[in-house]
Length: 171
Image 1 (cartoon, rainbow, N blue to C red):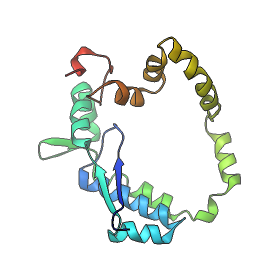
Image 2: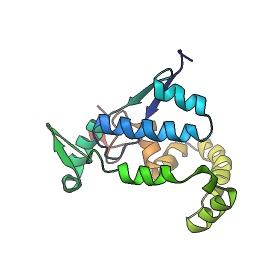
Image 3: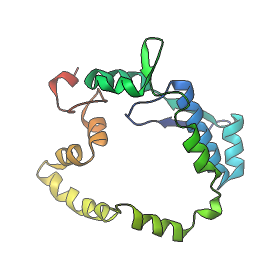
Image 4: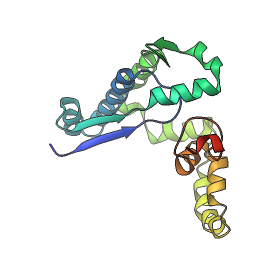
């Protein structure tokens, strides 16, 4: 297992400082793995499987605050940058991890689907429609409109705020 290396990439929303984000992600990963493969969980926890968080939260935070200065009210200043408070997710993560695997059943999943806006049918529609849309060059535009995070990653070298096609984002 020494040659395995997990690299996790976070999303583009505001983030806590790197050390806090890494701690939270690794804790969630290890605890989740324990539920399905204790050897794999131990390998990650002990470092036999290397774990790296590709962190750019400081950059995202700067971009998002520049576009929406009111976000500073939800954040803390550490050094020259603004972050989500380092322990802001601890309680929620601990609460989720205390729920035993046995409480995650197919019945729970089906109940959850009745409580949330289940849109899984859109995957089937997207598979069919994407072929047609791509014939007319509309695939990327649809992605940008319906999945702005993915659209930003697909179409822009600068990700974080605003319109991925904006000229100010192209450098």
